[in-house]
Amino acid sequence: MSDRNVYAPPAAQVADVPETGSPLGYEGERPPFFQVSVLKLVLLSGCTFGLYELYWFYKNWVLIKEHSEPDITPWARAFFCFFWCYSCFEFIRNDERRLDLEPTLPAGPLAVGWIAASLAGRLPEPYFLIGFLSPLLLAPVQRHVNHINALVAPDHDKNTRFSAWNWLALVGGGIVIGLIMLGLALSPHV
Image (tube, rainbow, N blue to C red; front, top):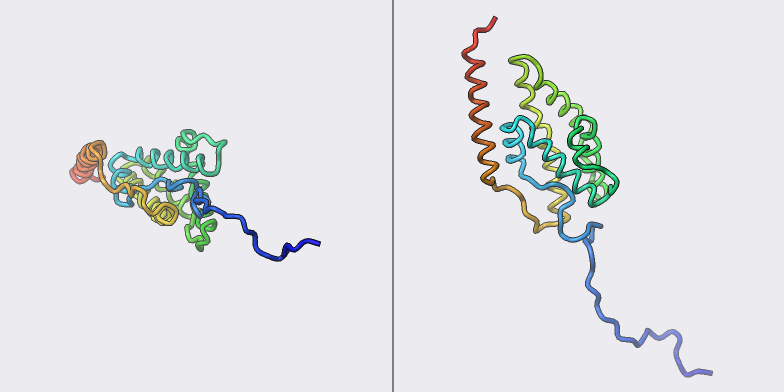
């Protein structure tokens, strides 16, 4: 019979192994969605007449592809954003669940509202001005994105600064919007 105690703890030395990946299931310290300030999103979307919204969708789909959906084509989902906006919003809402947050993003109503406002931009004057509301319907989505990103990667770049290209779009688009408003104000109403 052996003198060894089978109930004794192991005597081997164990080194601490650093954790890999995020404790929330994400790799590295990259945020899971496109980070941009709400103000920057709204201003650039309005002044670029929706082009920044396409860029916003593209950047989100690229990150969704990296984190969870390797078989998607981000540029196609951004280009056909009317058909895929609900799916994008739903990914964001599902990430709230994954992070044990109460999902509060109303993906369906926001998608319907964003599509309606975006299509209203093709109406005759002055009704096309409703199209300028579409960035405001992305604002709640971006607030949720910013919250999720802050939980997953607290030290990430918040993307609040305006680059030279951003300023060019703001000034150029602002001038065009100003001229449109002036033309509407000076046009005879029938």
